[in-house]
Image (cartoon, rainbow, N blue to C red; front, side, top):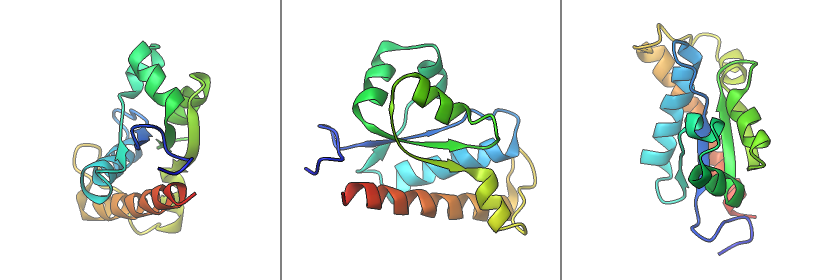
Length: 138
């Protein structure tokens, strides 16, 4: 096991809740792609609202494992909550940055991202996966 990894060997990918916001949905969709398909053995997630309210189990996980935040807007709720909880923030991603690089991939809506929104989410998931691999190689 390398020194960047915790005892359980997982990185926590934590998206903003972004309820009612298309870019929040893009971030959550990217997280699921990473933790369920691309790097299921290396990553997992926790519920951001539990972190926000100070759930002891979630606090321990975030403090003892490297975390990657995904935020859909400038409020950066995931990033700020990880930092406020004294979590181990290893990297952070802004959906708006990925959208700026791919302006033609604007999501259609919140409930249904549409093909372009799903492509944007996949691009973000790939960027997160590359960061996971980089962190694990340290």
